Length: 141
Image 1 (cartoon, rainbow, N blue to C red):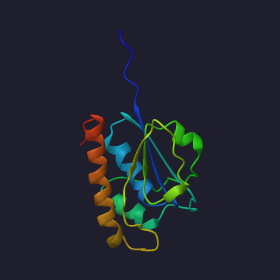
Image 2 (cartoon, helix red, strand yellow):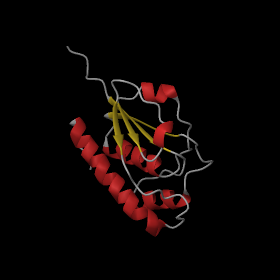
Image 3 (cartoon, one colour):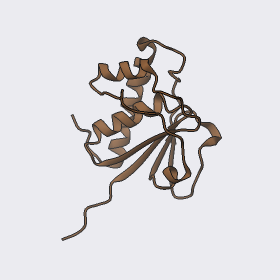
Image 4 (cartoon, helix red, strand yellow):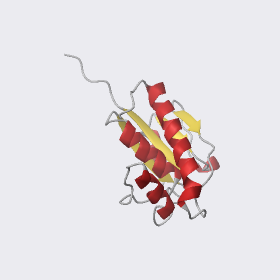
């Protein structure tokens, strides 16, 4: 009997780990059906997740209210197969053999209203679905 294939590991990184990276991680966790190890972190994490982001994710049935922003560590990058940056610039360490994707997305920080977050949320969901397809993992419904 052969060993199961190792799960892909994905790290989402933005500056505050309070918006975009939290949404990316939540969508991948939700749609990945346990087939992907998911992390998120920030180069300068905020104290809390953006309340408008929490509300926007609730609208699509994903509760991230218990999430806390986390600091980006070298270990998190080293133990990830795919690193998705969302505006963290050069603060994200680069290691050979990792797949890096840079998703240019508006920052929900300071927008304060769910209306401003919805288009960002929807674009992140679209990109996460594309990532799952690239990884050969069917998106959960």
